[in-house]
Image (cartoon, helix red, strand yellow):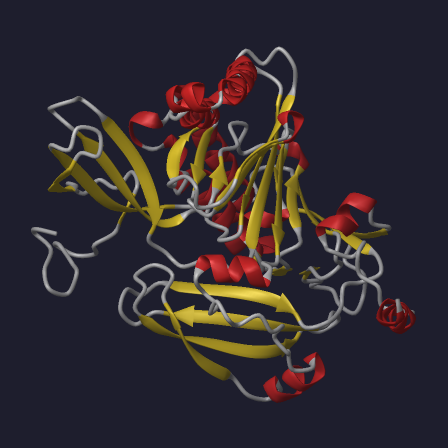
Length: 451
């Protein structure tokens, strides 16, 4: 790429945030047009999208035949877990939701038994309507050849194309499912900062085949990883900080991750992982529970009465949601991840996620009403942190592995209410507990072997 120094930096970091005020121009290269076989122009832009890490946006245009094409590729690391977005499309406004779909994502419409397998389309930054148009375009591409070779099949596909096109009228509700084993896809929540009632986000553990498809496992490596017993890992982490090499999630340069087992008074032991990059200064911390999923879910409610409440320690597990009823706000468990911080730190993270680093309110794509609504929400969060609003903070953790500091411990805290509840079937499904069998599995295993 012209204009890029040997160290991969052009006037600083090679990757800029979307919405950055810096004068950041794409790299322009001459490339072959696959439509007319003449030379066209490709523009490449390396950028960072919150929720989606680093991406490469490429745009091709040909002055000879006027054919154009845009696509995205992930420039960041593959996430620890895959992600599935399930969206109930009820109105035409839902078709305007912006979508980041990586090339490893599977797109499904169950009502039509329609599926686009992974790695059959390039990644894209589009809308729901754009995804439908792209699917129609892909089906129409080979129709002339089909009509000559198999007219009956071509007629059948024409009928299916009409069904896809009719979905854009939204005469009936339908479902769009985007399942991405890399974890690098995203569907916009236009109601942010409120909960999106039409969208469900779940994470899952990749299969061996999915690891092979992503290139993070050798093709001939089909053996199930043998994990060291959890009790041995916990014992090894006591009284010492474990350090291992990793790559920074921001600049991708080598960094160190520290791991420590911490005993939280009046709660339980947790594993804290912290990464500090000496090159770009980026810092992250993540919390994992060292124990099992509790038998009951836990809902912790704090009534904020003083600014000193902001200094309370908070352990938010990766399965915990955050609610502020007075602001009609709910943050799903998949949004922030596990954190060990203060209440003020948690609220700042929420503000950064919803307002300051929201890619869909930046630049020309930011709708004025959405921008005003989110800025107003940011002001309310600032008022909450200053204890200028009478609100309640609710930590709802179906796994029961979250904690809010009781400053009166071991006596009860008058401002905190703790409620234990039985999980629903859907919550157990999200936690992977419905298919988990811990008793009598030996008998079933013997039965399978003998049949």
